[in-house]
Image (cartoon, rainbow, N blue to C red):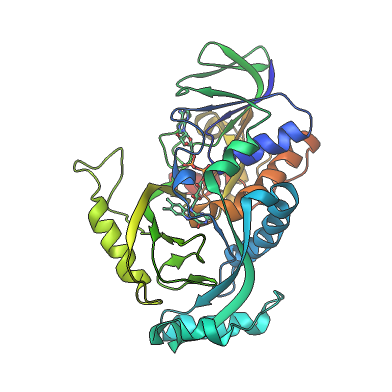
Length: 373
Ligand SMILES: Cc1cc2nc3c(=O)[nH]c(=O)nc-3n(C[C@H](O)[C@H](O)[C@H](O)COP(=O)(O)OP(=O)(O)OC[C@H]3O[C@@H](n4cnc5c(N)ncnc54)[C@H](O)[C@@H]3O)c2cc1C
């Protein structure tokens, strides 16, 4: 019997596997394609905050950025490249937002070197910019190392049955708790209030004779040079979905788009595309991640006091799946958010700590149910 079965070995599932195995728990993790085969394997895995206007997502990403940088540095220093990040606004509006951000932030700001600034295009210097210490992680190796002490099974999980105080997975594996960490893929448990947007992305690794001292984020993200290579990412393609689109994704067009966007910030010479990475990001309807227990919508709607409970957003009479949790909806910030929200989930499951309302999965049930009455 496992303490926890995790479905999905992307950065979310892997981060929870890491927290639980570190706490001495027995963990089994399933992935239909292999570790980091979904969005996580495609990520450039830049660790950066969100330089946006005020709001709960900005606050969360700021906290998660500080937490995750320390977490990666402490636990996986060999998989973290610490880099200086030069983030430049794209237009007048984002320039104003960035100027305000710089005034309010507690992050330590750096000054870009004149050699670096000389290497940029005029467009990269036209608007407000910010320079901070940030990082890039090795996405695939990170997920693999985090899963090291869990039992990994390459298999598509099709069935989950709860019986006699435990879950039976695909009629074979038994676990006390189950975690759905399936990203933008079809969910094993279908609940109408959980809606995830899969946004397709493409990034590339290139070889170039140009060199780059810092990571640059402007129209796209460009890594600093490592042994003559740079990573460039990523596209945001809402029109393509690997499970729904009829025509295959056009890699050549994606490469052209990425190189065109990168060349707005830096002049790249003698380019050879070495590798392509593609995958789906998974975003929630309010852009905040989803962490915690799932409400059984049918049973809850039948409950006597439910109208009052929903109107007052009181979750007292909600019916939840027993010992079943979800972690998802990290959008384009999976590697920034995952260690932070995995810790929150671990403390919730093992120490009964409350999860904030703005992260909990049941917020979507409340919104959906209000519309249903
Ligand atoms: C091109 C690109 C670039 C990105 N760049 C960055 C970046 O620079 N920084 C950053 O922080 N984030 C970045 N992201 C976002 C980040 O990759 C995602 O937020 C993150 O990967 C989400 O992780 P996840 O574990 O939720 O999902 P995924 O990594 O998609 O993992 C879900 C896994 O579940 C498995 N699965 C699904 N259903 C089943 C089933 N029934 N049985 C078994 N297995 C199943 C899938 O095979 C998959 O491996 C990028 C994303 C893309 C696509």
